[in-house]
Length: 439
Image (cartoon, rainbow, N blue to C red; front, side, top):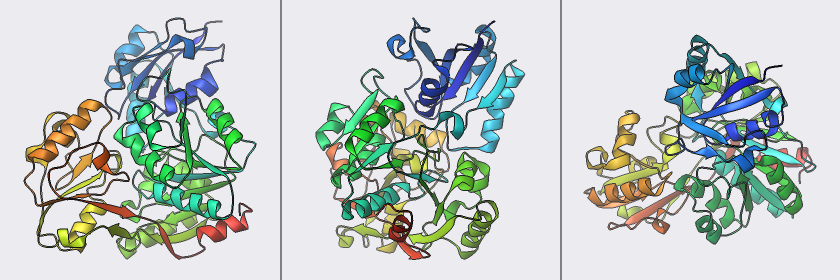
């Protein structure tokens, strides 16, 4: 019987997981290629043969997604499997239509096929969109569990953008580990704040092995989701973070709607800055499609080192890259802090941008007076640093979860904007954890 020839459309994370747990050992399937989207510099690699298994002596090539139709024709592909997140339903069906028009079937693998069962309790933190406030929620849950004397590890959604052989299972216990694994800015933004809390973070791409390592180290596992993907682990408690600034996306982005329907708790975040009608609209959707979910209203107050360096100043605002790019936001904590503390002007960085940072602004035209801290490769970090040096400003506000001063040399005064999540209505996260027996 002829094997089904498959392409997996991904972005260097969910795609590898789906292959590893659902397709690698399926004798009826042969994966002929991965395609890559969203993340720069991850195409034109090969999934290594010793990782892919004996059925793949040459490994599995990774191509840019733009080549999908050519690949379907030339590789005689029977089926395309979609395996990445934080995209509109329109985008998903555009890929499906391209695949079908080129002669292939189209499929998406769901939680039942791809989630792993842990022997430990799992709290999954997921989101409607990138930048909703998932990371501060994870941090708060970690602190609550630690305060109750629980031994906790956080397992992060994959970001294996480098040498896959070295990134099978990654363990981050201190800042030196970030350098040892040559982490990108995006990885550091997720790992560093948890490490600072004394929480060990695990990641990689081989999540059966990652899970075994997590079980060896902890009493409770926190799944710290990426983008708006659903958890790789079956969760005993699923907490969804929603952003009323993007009300409606919970039904129109993939797999946001999956997360909403599966959620045990929905946090309506950023209520202090969102319009009331957007909050009501979001709540109505939650009650309609996830009627048993507990609803928490929360705000994300920000903290700043020296507000006097903002008032009356010409300020450059640097924000978390994925929140602005994948997440589609045009502002973050740095912009809000600049306005709150009386900045004279927010500098438009676009005319100063060089290299790959200039390309980012061209690819995401919604960005204006804000600089995304993108750094998926050393070349992007160099271009980011050069762009910052060129900008004429009085001070720089950095709203990223990490201290960029560890990676970039600044010539102007730099202030960090940090933020935490704070419940203001409904049950608290501590009460939820107690009700469910975690503390």
